[in-house]
Length: 333
Image (cartoon, rainbow, N blue to C red; front, side):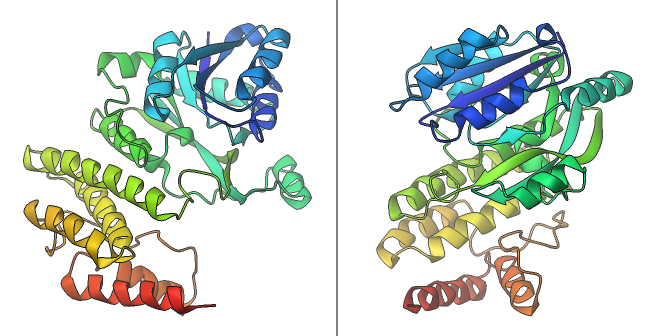
C-alpha cells in the first residue's frame, strides 16, 4: 500500500465532508491508500459524518478515542498505519483531487524519505477564482515554511519507525508540527519537492492557530515555552547548527510577541521564565540565518518595519517597542 492519510478529527462537522470528499476523489485504486480518521472525542456530528463516509468507502477507517489533543490523535493514526508513506491532513483542510497518482510516481521514482508538496493558504471560503486557478495548476505555493507544518510532507513510514519519530509531547497544543518536523530533519531524510500547490490550508476564526482570546493566547504561550526548553536542550547538547538556531529563535520571537500583548501581571512570570533560561534579553544566536520572522504578510514599508521589529524582540528595546505596538492596536476603534 502506497499511502496512509491520517486525519485527526475534533468537532470538525462544518468542514469534514469537504475534506473527506477530496481524499476520496483520487486517481489511484482505493486499495493502494487508506484514510485513517481519528475521532478525538468530538462532541458535535463529526462521528456521524465519519461513519457515513466509512460505510461508502472501503478504505476509510474510523478510530475512536477519548479527547487527548492533536498529538495523541496523530500518534493513534501512526500506530494503525500500513502505508509506505504517511500524510497528515487536518480535518478543516482538503487536498487537490486526482493528485495521489502523481505523488506516488514521484515518491517511488525518487525513493525518498520525504516528499514535500506545495500548499495554498486561503481565508475560510474556497472561492470560484481559486478553484479555477487550482484546476489550471496556477495556484501559487504561498506557504513558505515547509519545515514548520506536517501537512506539507509525505513521510516514509519506515524512516519514522527506524528513528522512533512520533509526536512525543502530548501537552503541546501549538507548534507541535514544527518540533516534529525539526526532529525528523535531525536524521537527514532524503527529500524531494513538488512545488505545485496540492494541499489547501484553511484559515478561519475557529482554528487553534487564529484564536485570540486571552485563554487561547496563554495556551499557545505555554506550548511555545515548552518547545523552547526542548530546543534549547538540543542546542546545548550539541545541535549548534543553523537549523536548530533558526527554529529556537523563531519560537523565541513568537513567545515574546504573545507576551508583549499580555497584561503586565501575566507577562512578568513568562519573562522571568525566559530570563531563567537565558533567553531574554539575549543576543541572536550566531548560527541563526533568518532574514524574516514571518509574522506578517505585508510586503510594503510598514510590513518590512514590523518584520524587522519582530526579529529584534529578544532585545529589551525590541520587546518594549512591541508592547507599545500592542497598546496602539487596542486603542483602535
